[in-house]
Length: 570
Image (cartoon, rainbow, N blue to C red):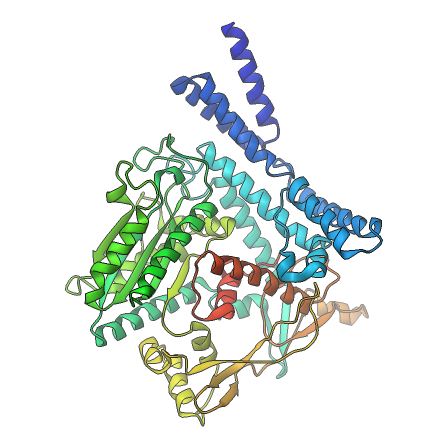
């Protein structure tokens, strides 16, 4: 009898392992035998069943590579086009079939028909590129979830992200760099750059991004001191059931309920929305920054540097503690671990110093030798970036204060401006003086100037209104900052082709220079920009519904969205 149980269990393990990549099969077996030794056959087989359910949720085989995924995306789009043909072109009927196919067959979250309309949703479902993005996300997250559940994401193995995910992200970024290197941008003054050269000049460059964040934090601290405010440093952690591994030993957490980092982030965002609502009702409106970073097992936790009047501190802490402990607040260690508050002591250092190491570790490891677990900071930052990219987690968020998007537009201005407010704000931005910019624009006197455009985009959506410049709302004066018109096209061996008489690669005209999608797409560059904006807008609405707050509106989120995906559109 015992032999039969052993045989059946190992056959079941082999069945589950069959659909996994080769590199995950041995860790699966190791974890299975550890659980069986510790807790018996039943718990070990339940572990296998959970993994089988995870794999079943990814309809595209986890063991397949990216080339196979691209072919599958084409097949999915063709199936939806077939639905359109079979239903005689009826949008409503075709959409019903397509939604059922996306949700029940492919296990993919479909586009929002209420938001995009039947036509917009159907056009997305009939697009191979839409399916490519959806399948890549599903595939990457499905693989990483299995890595987490088999113990391959922890300080014992691959800290923050699995080694396979880090390698995939590294290859992806290398591929994107080759793409950016191969694309030239020429402006209306004849200046020519590769997209790599241009991206190095903005917050896509990790060093620039880090310096800008630190400039803004230091500026916030300066105005907070002027206004008689105090600094608070808070850490918010999710309940035990969200953590796959124990913090001290790195061993399996028996309370873990299978949550992914994305689901944990949604939980923390929901609690944060409750906290903000309670603060707002009481007139507590702190400002500062939030940083999200992973525990060793990939579970996100938050660090918040906030400035507020001293009389608000006790109430702010009480509300934070209340909602930090709202779920499973009586479990062992909850009071100590879930919410930690530290008052910023100016005698011991600046507020910026409290958060600097978290920002550096999350971006490029600059100025940090090793992380908490003794990992080289540069290597840790690479693993954290792969983690954030895989799970779609926004690492940094400004809370309160004036728009950083307007600040960046002001830095584009050249020469003295007629508007006194715009000139003062321009000088502050040009000098990197975030504190002065806050004094001038805390109430939003300077906003973005947008171009009104007509027509529809790739999927039938209304065209986005591109940023043209900045606007003085008091004087009614706008100034254009986007003075260049760019032509973008492939730059590989253009000269040789022109000499030989071959046609050079096609060019497209855009008003600003962003990333380039390395596909064989029939759509031109402008259509791809619209696609990315649509994707960002869906995520923006989703995060707003989850309680996220974006003071600069959609465009601030869009710039952050572009950066956190490494300027990739594939």
